[in-house]
Image (cartoon, rainbow, N blue to C red; front, side):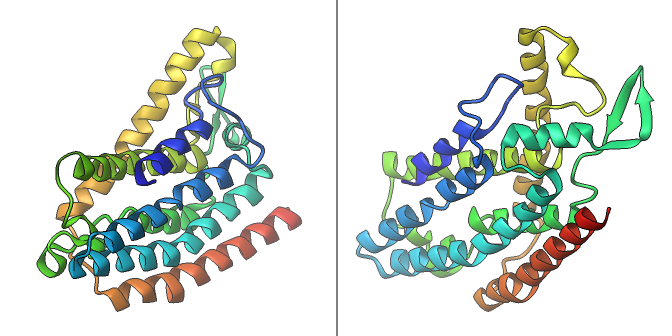
Length: 261
């Protein structure tokens, strides 16, 4: 479940104008919904181990995933309102049309990625993604000093490798979602791919997306050695008292400006 949920997200991630498994009308919500299935796998892994540390780690992971699923969705709603579509390619196209005062580079208009008008949503999503992936400073489910290795304590060999691979595929898919929603995805934003043939456009688009994803993945891994671990109560307070109200405020402000302007 953990590995399958992470890999199923690739179906709706566009790596180029034509490099996408399926461009669903509800693509972004499919990606978030299917990724949340990993909660079940983590809980089963902790419960079935017959170890108290594994059980506590599994329960912590489930509580953490449930708490941060809502900020994740609220952050995305702001982008959906801005782009007026839930299709992943539609959101990329909307960013390509969101231009900077008509400025041009070599005859190509400069587009503004949604990371600028939706910066609050981007920060909320980034923090919630770290928590969902149990990355530092939200790694309480596998806190070595308290729970040995949390829900992974009783696993080794192939089973441990599956969880480990699932975690890093999850990092890549979450980064790809962020790159698509807030950084323009495969679109370079200052160069129009439509003037190229299909092979060149898809190749350049894939390289652009991988470059953006690499930066986000680096930041996630860099934070592992940078910030101390939160306490469990601090983690829940951050979700329910800060991120969710901020997400609701971001939606209200985005909707207001969309209606008025």
